[in-house]
Image 1 (cartoon, rainbow, N blue to C red):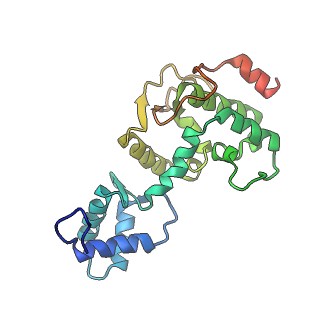
Image 2: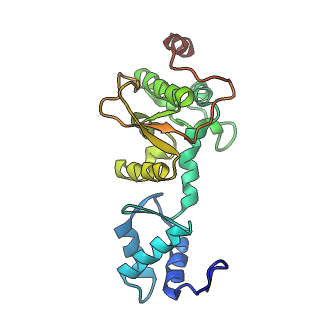
Image 3: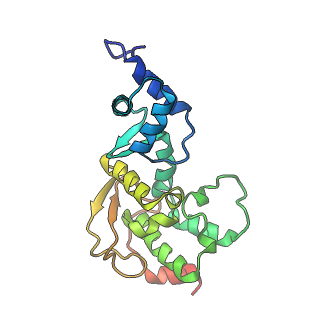
Length: 224
């Protein structure tokens, strides 16, 4: 087989690796490269680990998969679910909707409010306040605090190592930019040991100009 924009045929083994990668059911968004290669070697007769790795790097250049450092993202479109909470049009309203609903299921499947912090109502009051502060930073100042990731949909199901790989992909694509954490409030003081990113993929809210976190606003929000 040959791609329409290439003047030469693709090695048969490369096509076999891509087909096996597509056919396999991956249970994680990001997979360690060594683990992925081992799986695919077992599915592609006659292919060595070196050949499989080379094929994956080739298909990554064409966007069929993503290879970042020692990680493979076999379904690049799965990144959409990780970007959703970062670009949600009204993050604070989503928290409020989730809180008011409590333990009741959403009226519609895959409610947009659940794209942010789906278990927000189940958090302890102090943790809710900490999450609110970080969500406010993301909505108003486009700053993503590392401490928020374990609560965000999609991100909360990933291990710390997987999150690092996924963050690296977003940085590579220019959707996140590393930011000085010194003056960023992480919901419990300054972000001393946490990383912060400027979320360049986030557009301003339709409400207008960006504003920083306002404690009075949160007291009203929380009913304090």
